[in-house]
Length: 390
Image (tube, rainbow, N blue to C red):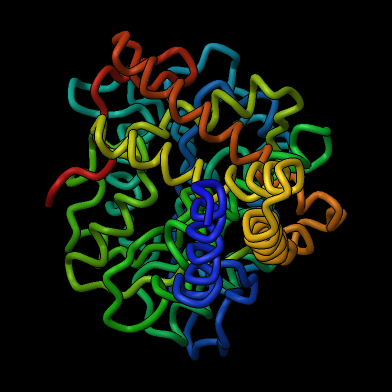
């Protein structure tokens, strides 16, 4: 066989393995597990880190204020040095909408060695713990919850004996670029951290989705959260590892009634979202970056390229293997597109989307070596850690 045919066959073998051997990552059936209402509803403190979120709060905060929760619950919003009146707006919304009680605190600029979000969470969790809640709900300021969201999360945690229950919020998919890039973000994340592997007892794979994390307070204390992960840029995965590493049981799945309201209308917006932490995910290691680029090329780019080359050169093995690999790839992407209610005709475009993610990852490394590190909302972390050792 030709070299092109061997590359195509290698890609097809990789896709057969991903289809069957990577925790069925492509399925979308990992939703909140079976649950029953507890005899007594535990107390919950909802901690919301917020930096310049005045555009998002009018949608997200009222959804928290309106939580239909049978036990005691309160909201602690941490205004992380916002310049757009986030704190004042939160207080005004609390008065206007009513519902759960709200406390707004402002901790000031982060101390050295802390990323901004975790610095905000440190103060929010410290204040919450002084009130002795049994659970903490850590949720971002751009996340909207249906009225029964907290009730369902607590019931799932209690029924399953979980120390951490996290739902990956359904991201917005309205613009052309959101439709092309956002479902793939969830697809790639679940490929890295198959939800089934995360959720099984005794798992070694740990991950969470930072927009919606219900955490047992006792588990947070045992894992020394957030102090133990204070430098993390990929804070959700680091949090899950810390909880799991301290003996806690975690669960991660797709959300049905938790949504991100943040828009990413342009490719540049999505590019910044991905590139700010992509190289941190690779632990800033050049060889891991090289392996990732080569892996993405063989797995995602080779199928359409070898199919076209095989057809043009009259190389049936290359065309057949490349086409089969592309078909398997598209088939594994369809469930995620269905979850996002997108056209299944987007599935064959996954190689193009993967190319975008490859370029975003390379750009993340370039920015790191230029000393810009992970930049977000006016802050730059020159050498962040993906998940500091415990």
